[in-house]
Picture 1 (cartoon, rainbow, N blue to C red):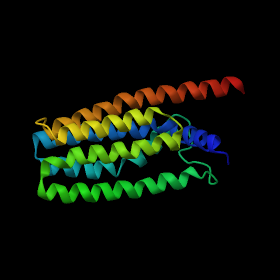
Picture 2 (picture 1 turned 180 degrees about the vertical axis):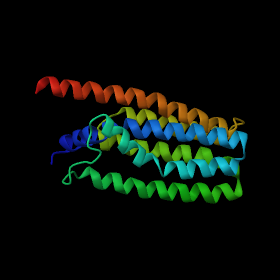
Picture 3 (picture 1 turned 90 degrees about the horizontal axis):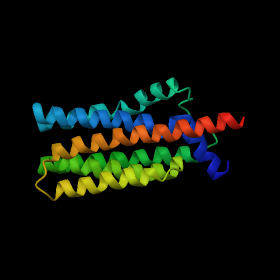
Length: 184
């Protein structure tokens, strides 16, 4: 399978990742509110448990968009998607270790981890907007970790960034699918 066709397959199978961005944003915002209103520990738990539901919820949503939610078995980018999950697990491990030492650094580290994963999504989906999304989250995490900005506020802003970009990526997906349908 050619590289550009592999990226197109990923976009058409998963609505360019818009659903994952949307649910991730919702979970980040929820975690920020839980951390603010209950405790930082419960906010961390909310992000961790909620994060486990991003993929299944995203698959349900993309199926509403009439996508398969499954890429072609011969798509070599499927392997990259799986490999990026291992980087996510390593980042979560580092964030949890750091949480036990300096709890306020958990959310900024996770913002940077998730942002780094979105940089990989640029290759998976062939959309440079993921560089902007990933870079925004990495920069936000860096700023929050080295400033007086509360980390809970960083989590909230990160979630808002993801939701805004979810709508934009969704728009890109709908435009591409519409143009492909018009050509056939």
